[in-house]
Length: 191
Image (cartoon, rainbow, N blue to C red; front, side, top):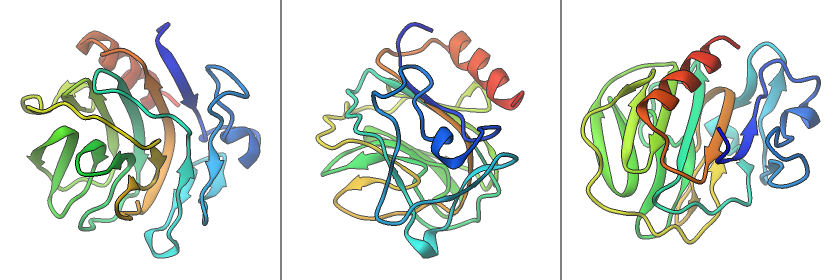
């Protein structure tokens, strides 16, 4: 997909440093360590612990028409936990767990009742996806992100750290189709 801005594959990477390299364009938007950052192993990828306030930076500020997809496992059921995003009066990103629901943000929020510990989550424009299928209806607003997104947390007004593993994460400067999301989900699950 030619619109890929950044792609990270911590699962199977040769080292922690290699896991942060942008596979779509090495040296541009490589992931950076937050104040505290995840541990890593080649079997599971990045391991984030909310209790340790861990996150990675990207330097990427998306628009409301962009897309992102990631594979997560071993999440704990936790209130208000972001996989990636930014939030400053409105948000752009995904909370795979917020109590017993998943919330997709693109200016406004769309909540889907769910209690899961793993899966492939995506946001394509205003439409959320879970394991390759559209997840409810799209959000109704459009984000105006004014901060670069974090992985394992949300940048902006407050901290909401992830507890779980991230095996892969990618971001695109276009709204991906449902077929593209399905193909990416299949590829991420094959890692």
